[in-house]
Image (cartoon, one colour):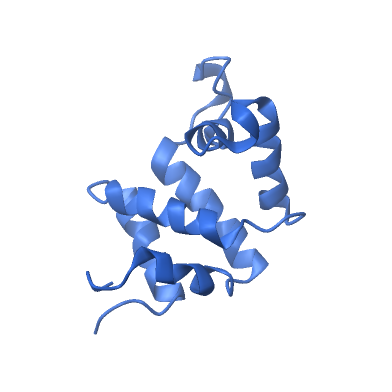
Length: 117
Protein backbone atom coordinates (compact mmCIF):
# COMPACT_ATOMS: atom_id res chain seq x y z
CA UNK A 1 0.00 0.00 0.00
CA UNK A 2 1.32 3.43 -0.84
CA UNK A 3 2.26 5.78 1.96
CA UNK A 4 -0.06 8.48 0.64
CA UNK A 5 -3.12 6.28 1.08
CA UNK A 6 -4.86 7.43 4.22
CA UNK A 7 -5.73 4.63 6.58
CA UNK A 8 -9.08 6.36 7.14
CA UNK A 9 -9.95 5.86 3.47
CA UNK A 10 -9.88 2.11 4.06
CA UNK A 11 -13.12 2.01 6.04
CA UNK A 12 -15.35 1.68 2.94
CA UNK A 13 -13.05 -1.07 1.62
CA UNK A 14 -13.36 -3.13 4.78
CA UNK A 15 -17.16 -2.84 4.69
CA UNK A 16 -17.15 -4.82 1.43
CA UNK A 17 -15.36 -7.90 2.81
CA UNK A 18 -17.66 -10.91 2.84
CA UNK A 19 -18.48 -12.68 6.11
CA UNK A 20 -16.36 -15.79 5.48
CA UNK A 21 -13.30 -13.69 4.63
CA UNK A 22 -13.84 -11.52 7.71
CA UNK A 23 -13.95 -14.58 9.96
CA UNK A 24 -10.80 -16.06 8.41
CA UNK A 25 -8.94 -12.74 8.64
CA UNK A 26 -10.01 -12.19 12.22
CA UNK A 27 -8.62 -15.59 13.26
CA UNK A 28 -5.36 -15.04 11.40
CA UNK A 29 -5.01 -11.53 12.79
CA UNK A 30 -5.67 -12.59 16.38
CA UNK A 31 -3.18 -15.43 16.19
CA UNK A 32 -0.57 -13.26 14.43
CA UNK A 33 -0.81 -10.53 17.07
CA UNK A 34 -1.30 -12.60 20.21
CA UNK A 35 -0.14 -16.11 19.30
CA UNK A 36 -1.72 -19.51 19.68
CA UNK A 37 -1.79 -20.59 23.28
CA UNK A 38 -2.52 -24.08 24.52
CA UNK A 39 -5.24 -23.69 27.16
CA UNK A 40 -3.10 -25.24 29.90
CA UNK A 41 -0.31 -22.68 29.40
CA UNK A 42 -2.34 -19.47 29.46
CA UNK A 43 -2.84 -17.39 32.59
CA UNK A 44 -6.44 -17.61 33.77
CA UNK A 45 -7.08 -13.94 32.93
CA UNK A 46 -6.09 -14.47 29.30
CA UNK A 47 -7.99 -17.49 28.07
CA UNK A 48 -6.91 -16.88 24.48
CA UNK A 49 -6.36 -14.23 21.85
CA UNK A 50 -10.05 -13.29 21.81
CA UNK A 51 -9.83 -11.81 25.28
CA UNK A 52 -6.48 -10.20 24.54
CA UNK A 53 -8.00 -8.58 21.45
CA UNK A 54 -11.01 -7.34 23.40
CA UNK A 55 -8.69 -5.84 26.02
CA UNK A 56 -6.49 -4.18 23.38
CA UNK A 57 -9.46 -2.40 21.79
CA UNK A 58 -11.44 -1.79 24.98
CA UNK A 59 -14.41 -3.84 23.81
CA UNK A 60 -17.23 -3.94 26.35
CA UNK A 61 -15.17 -2.24 29.06
CA UNK A 62 -12.42 -4.88 29.20
CA UNK A 63 -14.66 -7.62 30.52
CA UNK A 64 -15.37 -11.17 29.47
CA UNK A 65 -18.22 -9.64 27.45
CA UNK A 66 -15.60 -8.23 25.08
CA UNK A 67 -14.45 -11.76 24.29
CA UNK A 68 -18.11 -12.67 23.73
CA UNK A 69 -18.30 -9.88 21.16
CA UNK A 70 -15.25 -11.29 19.38
CA UNK A 71 -16.79 -14.79 19.44
CA UNK A 72 -19.96 -13.34 17.88
CA UNK A 73 -17.84 -11.95 15.04
CA UNK A 74 -16.16 -15.34 14.61
CA UNK A 75 -19.51 -17.14 14.49
CA UNK A 76 -20.86 -14.72 11.91
CA UNK A 77 -23.64 -13.48 14.20
CA UNK A 78 -22.27 -9.95 14.00
CA UNK A 79 -20.02 -8.14 11.54
CA UNK A 80 -16.86 -6.43 12.68
CA UNK A 81 -17.46 -2.67 12.29
CA UNK A 82 -15.38 -1.31 9.37
CA UNK A 83 -13.83 1.38 11.60
CA UNK A 84 -12.53 -1.36 13.90
CA UNK A 85 -11.04 -3.26 10.94
CA UNK A 86 -9.07 -0.12 10.16
CA UNK A 87 -7.71 -0.13 13.73
CA UNK A 88 -6.87 -3.85 13.43
CA UNK A 89 -5.05 -3.21 10.17
CA UNK A 90 -3.13 -0.31 11.71
CA UNK A 91 -2.03 -2.51 14.63
CA UNK A 92 -0.87 -5.21 12.21
CA UNK A 93 1.13 -2.60 10.26
CA UNK A 94 2.76 -1.43 13.51
CA UNK A 95 3.86 -5.03 14.11
CA UNK A 96 5.00 -5.58 10.52
CA UNK A 97 8.37 -6.95 11.64
CA UNK A 98 6.52 -10.10 12.71
CA UNK A 99 6.38 -12.60 9.84
CA UNK A 100 2.86 -13.58 10.88
CA UNK A 101 1.62 -9.97 10.92
CA UNK A 102 3.26 -9.29 7.55
CA UNK A 103 1.44 -12.30 6.10
CA UNK A 104 -1.95 -11.04 7.32
CA UNK A 105 -1.21 -7.50 6.07
CA UNK A 106 -0.35 -8.95 2.65
CA UNK A 107 -3.58 -10.96 2.61
CA UNK A 108 -5.66 -7.91 3.56
CA UNK A 109 -3.97 -5.75 0.93
CA UNK A 110 -4.56 -8.39 -1.74
CA UNK A 111 -8.17 -8.81 -0.69
CA UNK A 112 -8.74 -5.05 -0.77
CA UNK A 113 -6.70 -4.69 -3.97
CA UNK A 114 -4.21 -2.35 -2.28
CA UNK A 115 -1.02 -4.03 -3.48
CA UNK A 116 1.28 -2.16 -5.82
CA UNK A 117 2.48 -3.96 -8.95
